Image 1 (tube, rainbow, N blue to C red):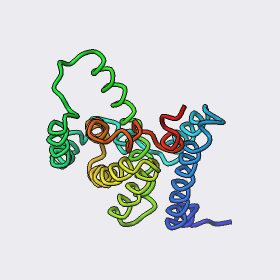
Image 2 (image 1 turned 180 degrees about the vertical axis):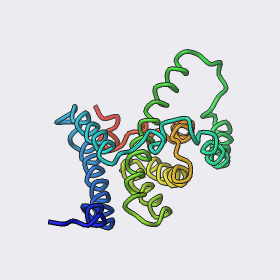
Image 3 (image 1 turned 30 degrees about the horizontal axis):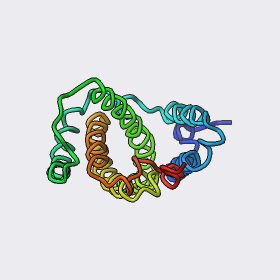
Image 4 (image 1 turned 60 degrees about the vertical axis):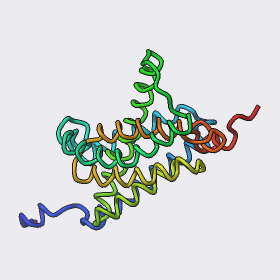
Length: 226
């Protein structure tokens, strides 16, 4: 049987089919994330390891690179130059309100504060890795309009914080900004830093009875119950 070079080089599946499968992968994995938040963490607490392994396997299948995932130092400065002025505009009013309301105070730095920022900052970096390096990367492949993919990423980020009203609004707005920056400059580190500072400010200035110690899912609903 004679096979032409063009036929031999043709893709196994069409580009449209690949886009559809990639989109379905993102939706399916996000459904797993929501299921873990709302149910699996209580009955299968170690299942996150399997979910993370699936994400890693997806990187291998899609032939993602560290640069494409935004995990290198490349594009660090352009990303920071884009996101930092924007968050400065958003964060300054929070700082002013925090000091005016007595919720923020200047205190000498100590080990506890440093440990908090390192711990919370690491968690924010993990969130940006999942949100941008994985989910937004898949959405950028599945959706032709990059701005629409940013909107979808923002909605997913906000939905992961249901039913906390403050975090839902904050993460949806910030999620869109972060996604737009990431689409042009593949680097998650300035985004993680912005989320760390923003999370600290939101937690500090929000009423405890409404933010419930930054809890989401069932943890928000049953916060402070004895």
